[in-house]
Image 1 (cartoon, rainbow, N blue to C red):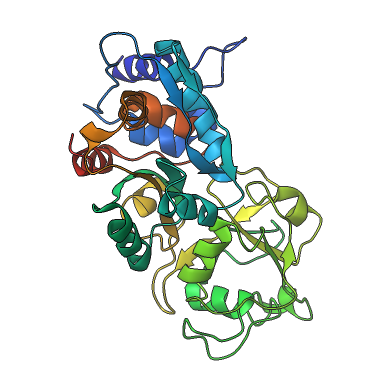
Image 2: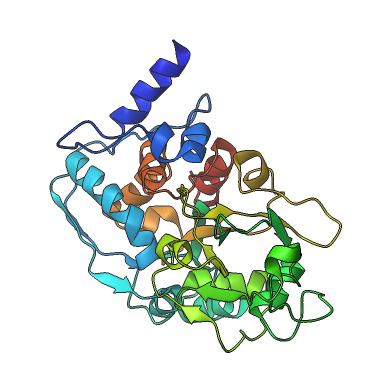
Length: 336
């Protein structure tokens, strides 16, 4: 009975569909699990009608959930123009627009550096407002015929990089060298990546290659959220991608931080328990000295985004919502 009530509350927070939508438990089991926590904070709309125009800066990755978030806000506040006009190819452009003052709010998969924060404070006279709004656990994907079940971060660096900054002793260019035994003998590794200037690739480069250079023969497939086609026809391929439910065309590997440490799969207990090593956050940045100094429509956007209903929209696209503890921390960081 309790689970039934929880699902009823969850689906009530989702947008209207022409037909009954698939349950969130089927679309995103991890997200469903996090949002089923007791006392997860719900959205309480601002009293009175809101008017104005909301124009965020965002990237293609965050666009996946931003559309649903804004559609839901339009149902609550039809007098506001909830627009999506400032789209960037990657988070670099978003952060630059915040620093030059052309954007008042940006959603980024890359955190501001210390130098960027300092530059912002010097220009505007106050620190940037920042909050985490979602998680992403990069998945390492191979063909289902590949006998490997896990790799280490140093091995991934040796596969994708050239300088072995993560500690491997030599480059890995065949599946036999990666530990795939007789199956891997004579099979070169075909390293697949998304566009290398995108935030997903940037995170992988920092977390795995330790900022080092890519190998020259990487196959770039541009949009990396769904690399199944690239791997399904190539048993020798490996790819990294945003966390999504996967089908039988690919195998998701478990990852260890170092040699001789346990490999952890990208499952809830490992991602939220901070054992899985390839986890990043999505951030929202706002240009104001205090949350109360933001325009009312911007505050309402943040209020919705950091609620059960907003996080459900994030989860429905396959991204990982904040658990209750992380959401309460994000709201407290904004002064709520």
